[in-house]
Image 1 (spheres, helix red, strand yellow):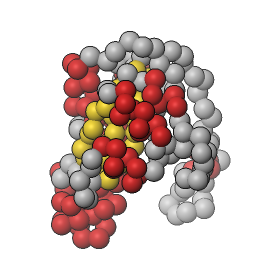
Image 2 (cartoon, rainbow, N blue to C red):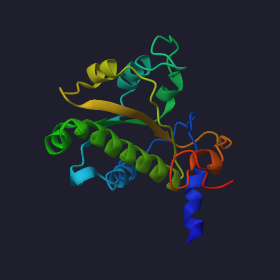
Image 3 (cartoon, rainbow, N blue to C red):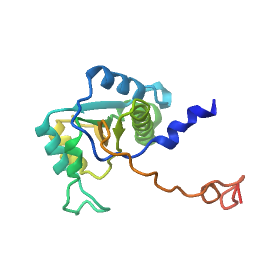
Image 4 (cartoon, helix red, strand yellow):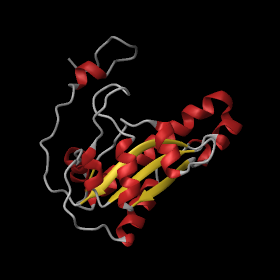
Length: 188
């Protein structure tokens, strides 16, 4: 059973793709996996905009930035190489109706879980994908014609990987796991 966990170690953020298209059948399977994510109150506030049109992808690229600042001027041009970009959105209307003000956070958590499912499903299918968070939400909303209340959460370019990046280091568990209360390492 532990061999099934290898998927978590194989997943990488892929930023180079071949020109090979992604079939609608594979795309449907990926999105069905995304919708199997956990969701608060079974409300499923996620919505997905599938972008294949090169002009729409180009407009999405213009809404992105590199680095750590929305003022950065370099867009993430590599996104346009992907055969498909899935824009994961959340609509917190139902989660706020159930959970009040904290419902917006519930919607974000649900959308994040769906995004991770999408990334893991892509990896399991031999596809490459990357979670892109460096974008200007208002520009993405305009490009996609998102209605009031629907918020873009992630851009996920997907395609056949042209390269397999090396794994990035992760912090050792002793720095991120606490025993019984914060500040007491679970592992030494």
